[in-house]
Length: 499
Ligand SMILES: Cc1cc2nc3c(=O)[nH]c(=O)nc-3n(C[C@H](O)[C@H](O)[C@H](O)COP(=O)(O)OP(=O)(O)OC[C@H]3O[C@@H](n4cnc5c(N)ncnc54)[C@H](O)[C@@H]3O)c2cc1C
Image 1: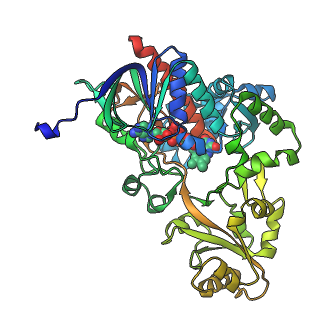
Image 2 (image 1 turned 90 degrees about the horizontal axis):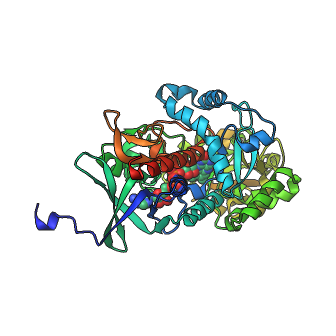
Image 3 (image 1 turned 30 degrees about the vertical axis):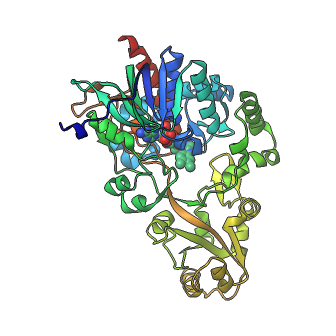
């Protein structure tokens, strides 16, 4: 090796029991769990803030046999939970990881209770068919509260959490066991060694355009990632250690979503004090609907998916030039346009149906609904009215009204001259919440190699450690993120003295 090719010697080398790469939901769960088990823990997070995609989520967690279920008089069982989860992915069962599915069913309830024991407040459980019984637990005021409480647990147990730190390499011994990590901190190369294990919790790869185009179907590859910061680094790190990627081509999306609100909602600014969250959860479950509006409406209109019913009730999907798109697959159609954005256009009289049940513009399933009036008040930036199509095209910055007129004519069977005013909702985008690809793991979240053997010292959790589980249905990704993190953290902590 030439001198110039040699890696620079590390500026520092520190020793811990457990090292966690990534401080999203799964990473902080791993860190908190390992620290509670007595391990000395270091968490390394690339972002300037902790939270990752987890902090951007809605905060639904589906779980069975929780304390909240028991309080609501619901008796549940794991076989039923597995069967119901399977109903969401009936078309994909041959590709699923049955042992991990079982582990998730058995452990998710323990995870919800574990989070609650740290001061996280939940409302629910709520129904979400085909789940046969209510299983959806919603974090109050949002998943930022879980991040804050896990961070607090880490601090209480003296775990170190460093932000602005990118892990670049796993340190492996000659037998391929993971001994530690190499990371960049303030321009210096540092090393940290782990006696018990290294936990990969670096999230999905939706922010990496090269990986999206290499693995995903074209519409998903072209879609906009909600968390552009998840670059899939963990896949390279894991593969260097012999890990096996699985389901890299699988994704449930893209989804049609409104652009994100520039304003911070109540759930963004509300402090994560446990007493306040507890009180909010009580209010959430027992107060009349009008009292809940401020708490949930800001979330519901932030950047949710518009209801498909819009297209069944006279809405037309167009691109930014007004050209008609296929509204039976709205997100795919939008992803394939040049600007990857468009508008939902309809007569104001048709849109008026969306001012009350049974039609809504967006929903947090089973919890609350947002109607046209909520969008008019809370998101005037994405609700555009005009007396006629010429005025609407102008308001939306379209080059002319010709394409829009044609789109309306094709879809509604008229030229749109009569029956205004018109309303456009948008822009709407094709967005990716998360990719399903991961590395193979066992039920302790230990990374497996091509021979199916454990890579010693290496764990993968959250999206990185989904291990072939296909998580369709609300609340299952967070259930897996926090459960896999909790389980891996505990096991890694046991290994610190060779246990
Ligand atoms: C809008 C939205 C709403 C959602 N709502 C729900 C919901 O209600 N319920 C549900 O179940 N699921 C939901 N999901 C999905 C869920 O949020 C994710 O699947 C889950 O949060 C993933 O957690 P994670 O810990 O694996 O990854 P993340 O939370 O993304 O954490 C990964 C972290 O690793 C860091 N990192 C990456 N590479 C490195 C590196 N080299 N060095 C150091 N750090 C690194 C990243 O910066 C990031 O902070 C939602 C997703 C979105 C986008």
